[in-house]
Amino acid sequence: MAELIAKSPAHGLVPVETAGARLTEAPLAPIWSIAPLRGKTEAVSDALEQGHGLPFPAPGTLHAFQGVRIAWSGLDQAFLMGASPAPELSRDAALSDQSDGWAHMILEGSAARAVLARLVPIDLAPAACPPGSARRTLLGHMHTLILHPGGDRFELLVFRSMAETAVHEVARAMTAVAARAAIGD
Amino acid sequence: MLIPCPVCGPRDSREFTCKGHAVTLARPQADAPPEAWDAYLHLRDNPAGPTRELWHHNAGCTAWLVVERNTVTHAVTGARLAGEVAAR
Ligand SMILES: [Zn+2]
Image (tube, rainbow over all chains, first blue to last red; front, side, top):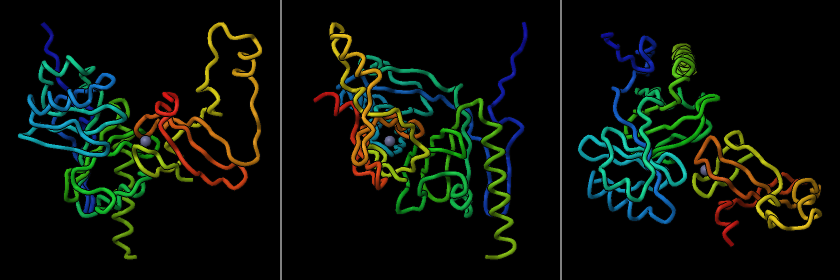
């Protein structure tokens, strides 16, 4: 019987390292979309608290509990990351396993914000994007979900088919930011 | 141009797609006369001034919005969830 080799979306593309920034890939983990049925957001939030110790996130927020996270991922939708949803959640929400659909990269370092400022049309400064934020926006021309757990760490999720383009864009911005820093402002 | 998404806050217009006038929220009944369907499908005003349009926040929260803007000054004066507007 053939032995299939699990290959991550950014396999062979990362790590990329420049002065002040490092781009890596997050370990493969379950990503489940949770979309509460009409009027059921509160019931779904209760079930999430029961099953995972997590609330249904308000727009723009990211929560973590015991290694499992939930991120707001759009209007009336959240991503449960790091666990399969508790069975009770299927009563009041549409659930779909999207684990294979996303490339999940991590950009961190003192230059991370400056790198993203070249690619992302929203403000990622701490005042506008505090720890525990989740943002749906653009990375270059790609749709993205950006998670900011805190510090100078930003997690970039793009559709899996765009992994190579995403790494290319981010790496180019990393190089440019490092070059700018090297010659001084 | 910033559009004040009620879910995401003010966002650059490159995150949105414009569908056209919000008249499409008022779909005629199936048995409405042909004139009503003709107007719904084909007839649009071309206002110089305030107008209401449907915009999709496709690179953001994915909500459909009713955006109010002024075609003369380009000022965007408001945005509401289309789902809430249509429910009235
Ligand atoms: Zn939005």
